[in-house]
Amino acid sequence: MKLYVGNLSYEMTEEQLNTLFSEAGEVVSAKIITDRHTGQPRGFGFVEMESKTDGQKAISMFNERDVGGRPLSVNEAKPQQKGGFGGRRGGYR
Image (tube, rainbow, N blue to C red; front, side, top):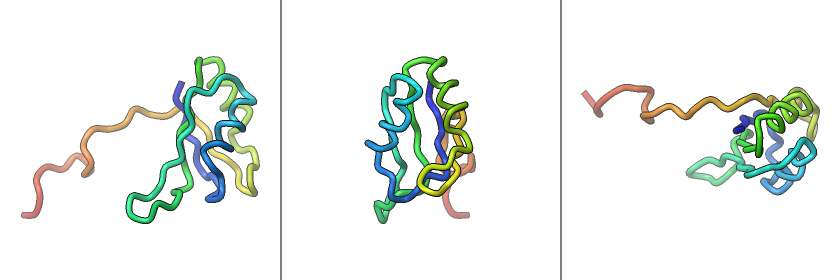
């Protein structure tokens, strides 16, 4: 089960995120999203849990939990939408 994790501290590392969520069960992967141009963290990421049971446990354990002085927002990740420009076609008109 893939989880969206929002409101992350900008100092948090992927290793720390993995360690934190391993308290809820088996973590398959943990990824913090960074800005393409600056490489700086954007304050959110994704954690993939081994099972739906572990994912649900992680949501109940970590949603709104204070981590690094910030209340996390944790929920099931929505499928990525296709198209990178809000669904519009073409370039300049």
